[in-house]
Length: 261
Image (tube, rainbow, N blue to C red; front, side, top):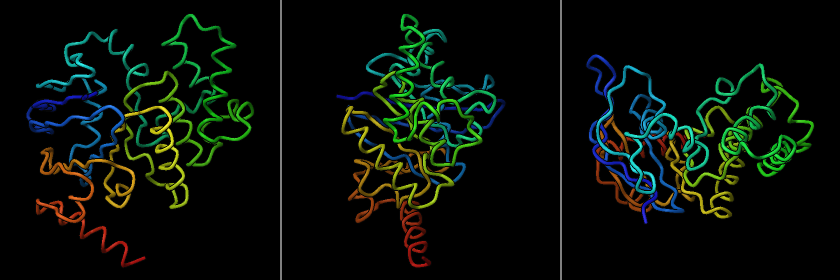
């Protein structure tokens, strides 16, 4: 069964900047799908379209169904309910996505209380500690009182994951979740996401420009070039039987990077 269905999605930034062109793809329950492509191909915009977090001068056409519910015609009030409860997002840069003036525990607390208003503040705070421990942040009660700038890049990314998972969503949109992290921390973050998928049956859309992150983690791969979906295949087919010229260029770039290491 499909959890998410995107049909004929067109996104235009006023007045005439056509960004996404008739995207069609789906994500099944418990499936991990990678959305790959070069810088400026429209990957992040696709995720923001699903979350309805686009700027006001954006024109969107098509259909985005989450468990059969049309997101493009939902009220903003309904979208606020769906964000967090049904879908969560790990943004590309935690340093700019986290509020530098708020302690990290209170940022996660806000997300919990927005979707669970009947939960007492203490119970909600206990859940914050549990989430921080779950994403492998040690000394959770101490860390919860810290500000984002005092944490390492890997720790900030874990806070973003905790925030995205605060209300047990079914769909997780992970936008370049390992960008600017060292190789060891990258592996730790991907292992964490893999464990979360296994434990909770999460569906994940992994947005990345790095095909080397896809193998061993994703079920299918979508290749985006200049806002157009040029290839959709299993991971094995993508690596061993790519059909589009642009995909072959991306794979050659991965091979060159590995040879240089």
